[in-house]
Image 1 (tube, one colour):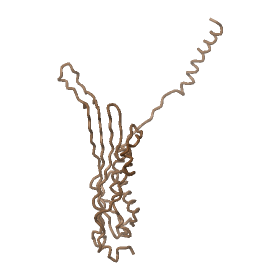
Image 2 (cartoon, one colour):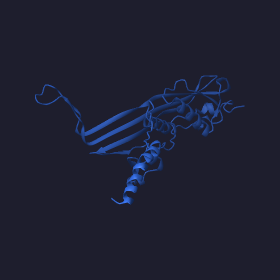
Image 3 (spheres, helix red, strand yellow):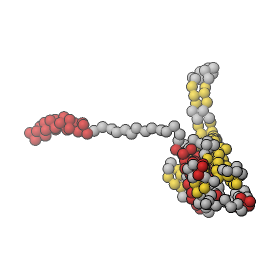
Image 4 (cartoon, rainbow, N blue to C red):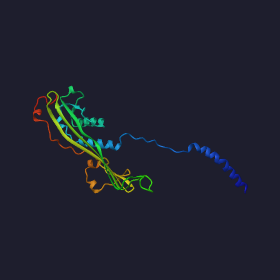
Length: 254
C-alpha cells in the first residue's frame, strides 16, 4: 500500500468520529403537536352559515325610526354570541335605533329560535365492517374492515328564526317577521380509495383534498351567493306594521 493511501486512510479514521461529534447536536427530527376543539370547524361553519341565511330574509325596515330594545333571553343556540351580535348588526344596518335598556325603548323586539342543529346522512356502496364470531370453525374471531366502492357523507345544518315587536307601554303587537329557515350543507364522497371529494354550500365549489376543482357549466350559471353558500337574497315578509300604528302621534321618537 502506498504511503499516500495510508496517510489518507488515517486522516479519515481520525476525522470521522470528530464529524459525528460535531454534527450530532444538529441532527434530529421535529414534531408538531396538534389539538382538536370539542366542536369541529365544519359544524360551526355550517350552523353560522345557516343562521346568516335565515337572518338575511328578515326585513327590519318597519322598525326604522322607533327606539327598540332587543330581547334575546329566548334565543337558544350554542353559538349565542354570534347569533346575538349578527342580529344587532342586521338591525343597525337597516336603520333600527337600538337601545341598551328597556325603559329607553318604545318597542320591544323579541327573538327566538325554533331549531339550531345539524343532521348527518351516510351512504355506503360496498362491504360494511363486520365482526366474525368465534362460532365459525377454522375462522379466527375478529373484524373485517370496511371495503367501500362508493361512500358518501352529507352533513346538514338547519336554523329556524322568528321575531316580533310589541309596544312597551300598551303591549300591542306592532310587527312580526314570520318564521324563516336557513340551511347549509357539507358533502364528502370517496370513490374506491380516492377521496374525499368535498362540496356543499359552505365550500363555494368542489374540492379534492383541499384543491378547488374548476366549476361546471351548471355551477357557473349559479348566482354568486349560491356558489359561496351565502345568504339568500332578501324577501319581503308577509306581515307589516298595522296602519293604525303608523297613524299614531307617538310613532316617531320625540
